[in-house]
Image 1 (cartoon, rainbow, N blue to C red):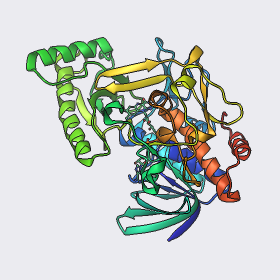
Image 2 (cartoon, helix red, strand yellow; image 1 turned 120 degrees about the vertical axis):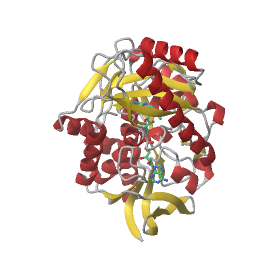
Image 3 (cartoon, rainbow, N blue to C red; image 1 turned 180 degrees about the vertical axis):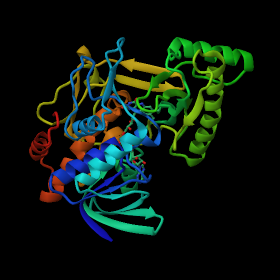
Amino acid sequence: MADFDVVVVGGGAAGIAAAVGAARSGSEVCLIEQYGFLGGAATNSSVLTHCGFFDQTGAQVVRGVGQEVLDRLDAHRLYRTHTVPESGNTIVLLDLETTKTVYDELVTSAGVELLLHSTLVGATTEEGRITGVEVAHRGGRERITGRAFVDCSGDGALLAAAGADDVMLSHVAERQASTLVMRVGGVRDEADLSQAGIAAAVGKYTAETGADLVRTSGIAVRMPVSREVMMLLVDQHRDVLDVHELTRAELEARRLSWLYLEAFRRYLPGWEDGYLAGTGPQIGIREGRRLRGRDQVSAADVSAARKRPHDAVARCGWPMESHVAPGVTEYGKIAGGGWYHIPYGAICAASTENLWAGGRLTSSDNRAYASLRVMGTSFATGHACGVAAAVYADGGRHDYAAVREGLERQGALV
Ligand SMILES: Cc1cc2nc3c(=O)[nH]c(=O)nc-3n(C[C@H](O)[C@H](O)[C@H](O)COP(=O)(O)OP(=O)(O)OC[C@H]3O[C@@H](n4cnc5c(N)ncnc54)[C@H](O)[C@@H]3O)c2cc1C
């Protein structure tokens, strides 16, 4: 059995920031990740574009641990941004292997005890507090105790293990679609990556073969270093918390990815030699459980760019982008293309005293969720969770002023 001040579950954007934020606050921190590398959706689903570091006016809204990620990418000569002229959205382009290494360096240099290949499978609670978690790995099972706990598992693994009262779950039909991201190599530099070109190629292919390609257009981005094209096209709308449905989603999406590739090879100029360089290791899951927090971000807060001077812990400048069904995306703006505040209560569990949750678990309604789930914002909410957990582990209390002071000391934009 091992004992820590702060235990963080999940090593994606939010968990990395939570673990580093807590360690920089002076806590002994354990970070638990089920895969053999960090990065969450960026590295386990090839979502290689960080959204949410900038609002639509181009102002940076996330710094702190997130800024350290950008600085470390820069040190690897791989800090590249791209602004979409039509929307003003600025994204940070990533390279898969460099990103893994940047996260390794960041977490280990902060002195975090990292457990890879370790899956959270249970938790014990006592009088409304979590006392420990159970982790399964190749060597067996291990119990880890702590004073404060952070769920950044995306799937809400710890929320579910600690007690259903802290879980919010939309009806399957209302949850966002999952997407198997395709990385395609061998695509010539001058090749057509346009939405119109992709739609035309898919249209011709389905007319000719009768293939069941529901989504006719999607994002195609040329990645730095590998020059692969990252494509978000293969959607599946299923209950990802049901392992049978998730298995069907993986199998079906993999089958469809070959059909899309064939459509592009036949009908899209410059794609003739394209090959499937990679998918996975898992389908990209946009939505499962969420935190039932003491407070919640609403779509009205997002639309109005609501500022919360007295309880803010993070900023979000990414508009609402809801993948409501395969191939169907609904958008909603933030007033003035600016940003809104995420309050402390949206990262604190409603009923478990020493539990925080960030990233795509942050407490929100369905439409606000479509905005704050992105990775840039996940670094910010995760960072806030880590500092809050460290403050609690030290003093045994929720102290917003201390959390804010800690975040600002670590360079976060609040
Ligand atoms: C197809 C797709 C496209 C997207 N496009 C973009 C985009 O272009 N830009 C953008 O910024 N965002 C995008 N998003 C959203 C974004 O990727 C996620 O919302 C974001 O990664 C959330 O970060 P997180 O740290 O909360 O969770 P995740 O990135 O999901 O990380 C959670 C981590 O927890 C680990 N974990 C889960 N369960 C356990 C367990 N029981 N034990 C141990 N570890 C566990 C996982 O392995 C993972 O590493 C996209 C999402 C999808 C699915």
